[in-house]
Image (cartoon, rainbow, N blue to C red; front, side, top):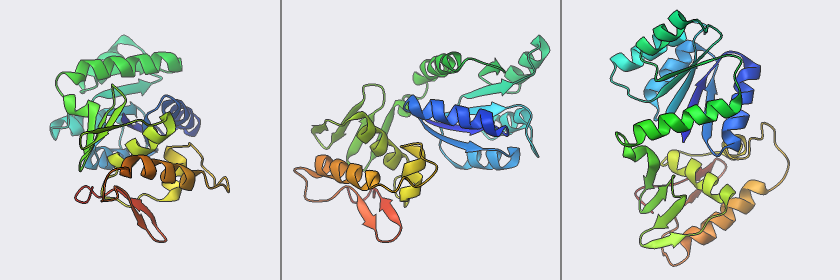
Length: 227
């Protein structure tokens, strides 16, 4: 799943990103409410995790604004405000679930799974990604290109998922290190190049058209009209 975390507490946000990525999700983070609303409205996410108390625009306003604009993405509200009235306000604002801080990360993951199951019937597209002739089934962990099934290792699967979620966009080496390997520094290794090479070899076997394009000096791009 692609998840956006809107949380201004740096330690909480870092904890969430680390745990979500280790669980196999693609996770982004925004610390400002206005920026979070802009990003949530403009990009496709499978789930939002939204703190209530944020700078510039509070969490409940974010949820109300998204719902008013027709956005149906599931929202899990996080807050230190845990009274019944607080939870009721969060759910009535359009939140799908409400988790009180401090929380156990295992419970957070369980609630994410529950929200995924709840919305799978109404939005089956969330469980599948497609980029050109490449299709990824996120639940079955299955990848096909045309009629051929491709066997990928977990890291290769996560790498391909990130590329597919950013299809037709240039993805830099730094973006891959941060979102696929959870490195927020350059490890001075060729880990990205090695995995890209392995992924290409598996994805291109038997096909004349390469599925991934290298943009010299910038990164990589998965062209949906060229795969």
